Length: 187
Ligand SMILES: NC(=O)c1ccc[n+]([C@@H]2O[C@H](COP(=O)([O-])OP(=O)(O)OC[C@H]3O[C@@H](n4cnc5c(N)ncnc54)[C@H](OP(=O)(O)O)[C@@H]3O)[C@@H](O)[C@H]2O)c1
Image 1 (cartoon, rainbow, N blue to C red):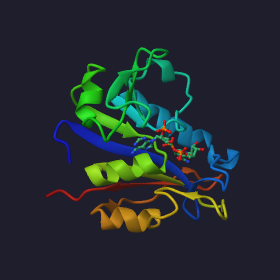
Image 2 (cartoon, rainbow, N blue to C red):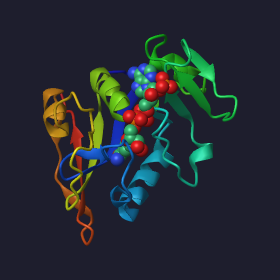
Image 3 (spheres, helix red, strand yellow):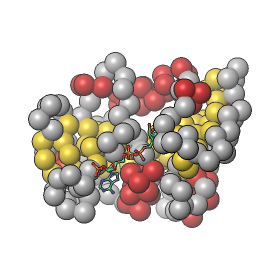
Image 4 (cartoon, rainbow, N blue to C red):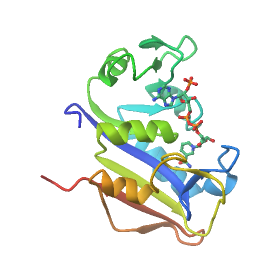
């Protein structure tokens, strides 16, 4: 795990552990107002956001946030000509700290927003926290699992990585959307 950065993931999944439908699109039923509020407040506190090409959070303050967009379309790190607070980063070509240095960020919370490949990449680097929201009434048969189709279900993958589940609480009891934060036990 990085000393300078604390990797914290944010996910909302269906009861059967899916973050998108069979076509790779996030269903409307996975968008919940209370979860969005929780997500927005966390992103406001983060030093930097990290996501793949299709996982931009699309919120009101998005343009102000520093972000690292994971891509194979650059060899190492490159500025995003359209967004002054964003850089493109290829994890095969440069360390995460180089992408952050290009944004003037040298540590703090890196909020990991997915999708599956990006969640998996940071699972290897070591999560400090994994905030798992659940739409407990929704099932998405044939959908896209949190860590991808060829991976363990989300809870099994987090346990295997040494994280333990925190208590589950309702973010929105009426809509049956819960939250549990998985974290690394203190050494
Ligand atoms: N429910 C949720 O909480 C949640 C969270 C996140 C995403 N989603 C949804 O999940 C769906 C699928 O997302 P997605 O699979 O398309 O994920 P994504 O990670 O947003 O985008 C995939 C792209 O990211 C780049 N990438 C990711 N990992 C990389 C790596 N290790 N090295 C180089 N490039 C890498 C690649 O871009 P290049 O092709 O440019 O190389 C790849 O094509 C979307 O509908 C999204 O809205 C839902």
